[in-house]
Amino acid sequence: MTAVNPVYERLLDAHRREIPQLYLLVDPDKADPAELPGFVADAEDAGVDGFFIGGSLALLPRFEECIRAMKVAAKTPVIIFPGGVHQISGEADAILFLSIISGRNPEQLIGQHVIAAPMVRELGLEAISAGYMIIASDTVTSTEYMSYSKPIPREKPEIAAAHALAAEMLGMKLVYLEGGSGAGRSVPADMIRMVRALVDIPVVVGGGIRNPAAAAEKVAAGASIVVIGNHFEDGSNRTQLRAFADAVHTGHSQSITEL
Ligand code: 1GP
Image 1 (cartoon, rainbow, N blue to C red):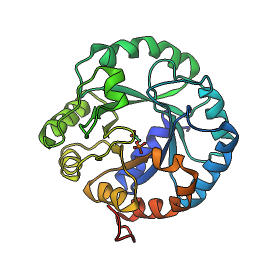
Image 2 (image 1 turned 180 degrees about the vertical axis):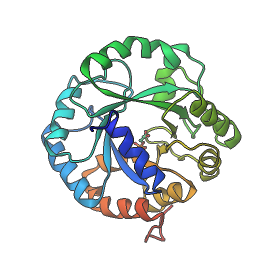
Image 3 (image 1 turned 45 degrees about the vertical axis):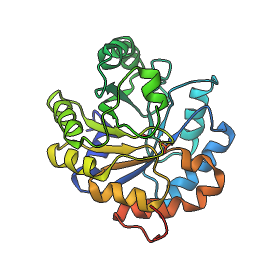
């Protein structure tokens, strides 16, 4: 029998077996579609477990073109991480059906979902409901600004943990702790630890992770999936793909010079 939600079941299986995963976030405004098949193939060879695609803005009309290019090479899931209802496509394997639960903006909690749901159904796209929390960093992030959603103070792990618990009780399939793309400070380990201790669903952590030691730290604290975006947009950093994948899969980093 084929799985009803194959992508989520894959994530959940890895989470339950305590095999942390490394996902890369592709920003369609910054990626070159011609280079994406090669990038995806190299990343998978290095041990990357899957890909998100999306962004707060869409300055260029090539979202679907990027997904198609990724799918040429991808053996692992390509999941939409939507910046809004303009980022829905049947070419992807699944979509994170995100509610920004750290904020109190009804549009981001249910309004946009009502607009998106019929289209997602019509396209046969697997929807993975996600309780998305913006965690304060050192600057106002694009997500915070664009979504009119207040972040959770980074020194209040118990607030994040209560949100995660509520998300799980509401039936959401994962929680996502977002430091913000390019954030100066990533999500604190004690917050990840407290969230992971309270919920059974997968815990995704991203934003401002720039070296294998930081990625390993998130895993050691309990992240089920670590997400890296900006760092690999710079082609010269791609030689580090394997070091990041190894750090995430083991929870340890060889590097002692970074964190
Ligand atoms: C995914 O927004 C992050 O959650 C990606 O952040 O670009 O800082 O890696 P970076």
